[in-house]
Image (cartoon, rainbow, N blue to C red; front, side, top):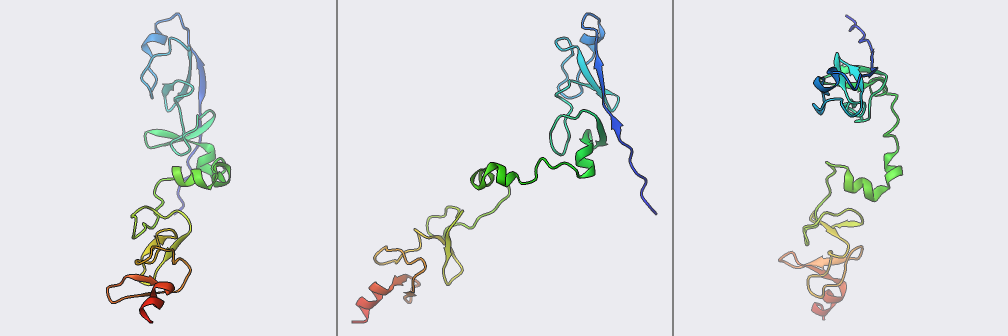
Length: 169
């Protein structure tokens, strides 16, 4: 059975009499302050809101015009219809560094040596552990072995070819 289509509602801009009692008694449904200073309100869901207080629960932008109820709030028509392109290409707009700083939930491998997250240019050794390129070093001389052949001793220490050659003489 087909699900019935939901119908959009529309916000109504209201100008209140700033000298009357209604403006002091009427409270915003979001911040619970009265309308004394502005005298302007938006009516949605049979409630009154300051113009900037009625925001879409999805995109967090101010709603003016068509909306649908969603939970205890409203969702703008653009988000309901999927026509909102405000977040398209935000990586391009912000830049990769800012996205990594601001986008929660992104997990990075941690370096086995320094225990810090590896954001770029990491290496993985033969045991499946991840390292920063600067941390992936010979355990004897401390030189980087990232991208270079190396060996391990019986204790699992990583040894570069130069140090290995000392033992083979």
